[in-house]
Length: 89
Image (cartoon, rainbow, N blue to C red; front, top):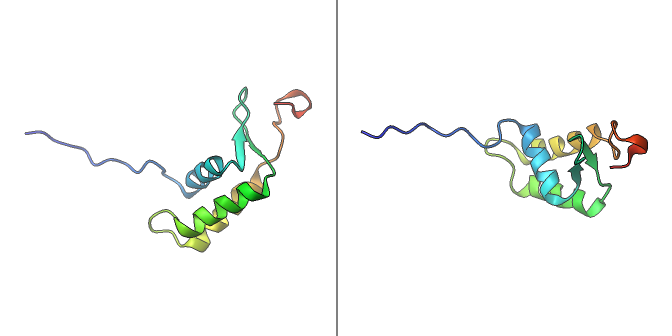
């Protein structure tokens, strides 16, 4: 008999989900050399991410909670990589 394991969700935390949404919207990107997340300061990309959170929050999460997490992630990252000289990535 073939046994199957139940699959884990692809995103395990709300923060991980928010980072993924922000990356897909183009609001953040990673420093290719060091991996730090950087804010692109694109207001249209931010609005796309917030609209995604409003329309498609993770299962079991209220839209307001998803939007708050998007904003928390944006507030927690800067626009430069702390490890790159002069912030040039």
